[in-house]
Image (tube, rainbow, N blue to C red; front, side):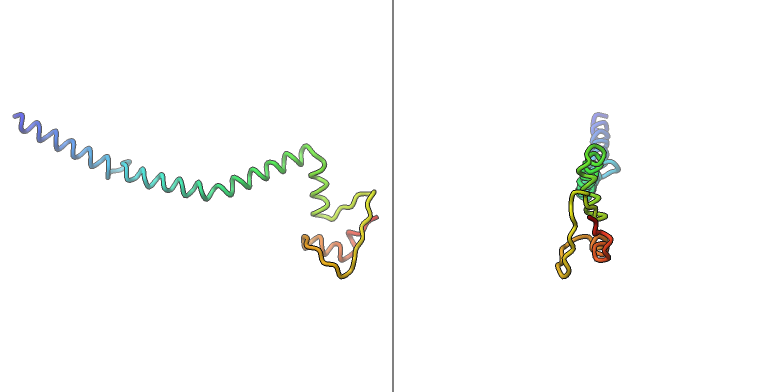
Length: 111
């Protein structure tokens, strides 16, 4: 009788060990899930950084006029009233294509 009980308990232990290591929700699956989480976390990091930069830019645009002025200068070629804009033909400056075409057409030249 004791022999059969020991065999049954040993068989139950082997079954539970199999399920723990190789079954659904076991250690092997946990390792795969952790690898997948690490992969996705690595892929999401540039997006988190971009979101943080955009959030900072939104806060800056909401609170400060300097950021708005900088955006207006770079995006639409704004020039303040106390500044003069000089266009020098033949000089190339790296900038946004839209801004370059605006300046070339004379639309950005204000005094």
